Length: 128
Image (cartoon, rainbow, N blue to C red; front, side, top):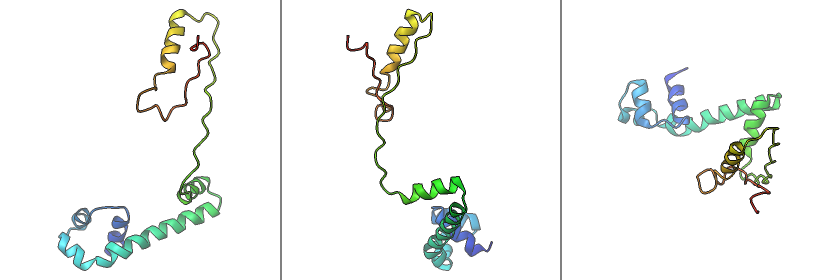
């Protein structure tokens, strides 16, 4: 891989110009002067090469590549429907302590940063 190609790859990965200059052993000013094309259009071209390779892999049947391509191409996914959490089956010999711990854990996410991420806990006994 040539030095110009490396600069384009580093730029496509989002590296700062200072980091790229340090990696190839020149000053930031020299980098900007000598590698302007690679820092700008070269970064886009390097991303395009990767995108095309990913698309070819997906078209060839690679499931991980298909998932990536679909994930990249879908701009605004629909919100997933919220499902009710099934109540755990109570094992024979369920103690009062286990029952209290289970009830306490059921609403642990409420009011926390996890509140929007976890499904809501529906305890039919909580309404009593």
